[in-house]
Image 1 (cartoon, rainbow, N blue to C red):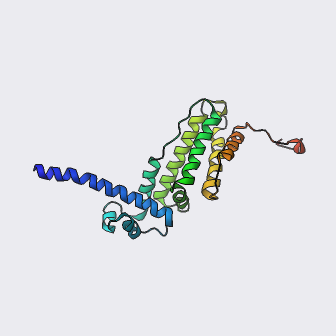
Image 2: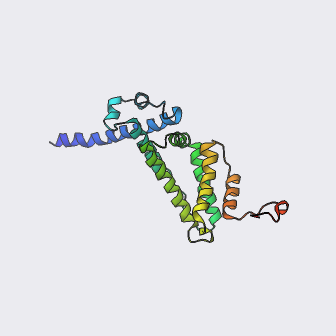
Length: 202
């Protein structure tokens, strides 16, 4: 009996390692080929296992991809606000977010998910990621002079990051992020408002 119990204990870490290997392989496969071209066979080959091993854990390719994305998102370290300056906290957070999209395989995987947003398994992951990002920005803006129109400011900042990095796949430097933050907070005046003087909205 003791031998059987010992064998079961040893089996769990092996199973966990295989599951983690499958999720890593799935993430790499989607990053390299996209969702449509990703196959269970390809994932199994990359992970060095069988399709049967995958289907014992996940019923569909979509469930497997969603699990891989969920695991990667859980591993992303967030940047906590320092509370010394709203602008500095926003610059740090958005700079970190841009770094994740730019250097991590998360960028191409996220773009692939957005192209399949109506897939229920992916909708949940995308909604969760956006909720986390909005919460982080609310924690920076709340109880400050910039709490007014907070959701609109968040839309402006996240919209800027998503358009540049996700949709247009363009690099974003810290200087550009700084300017976006200052504009969203209303800390930058128009450079030359005189030609528009007297016009509505000026």
